[in-house]
Length: 91
Image (tube, rainbow, N blue to C red):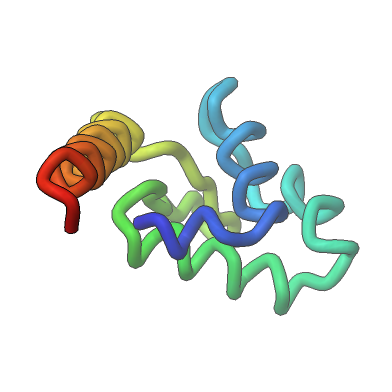
């Protein structure tokens, strides 16, 4: 999941999707106008379990997976607490 957030374009996509589902055509400007690059970023976010895609005829709509960002927050908290424990024992 953390790798999915390593690119600013993917953060922008998630930010756009916080307002609700969006058609790919509404997200096109994010990846510098390249539809293939946008498709790549969306694929990374789908594979990380952060977004889902539904088809409406020829159009694809993306939305944030319910609980997807919560999973990311839990993973982050777990990772952060693990670092704290290692520092406490001098690892």
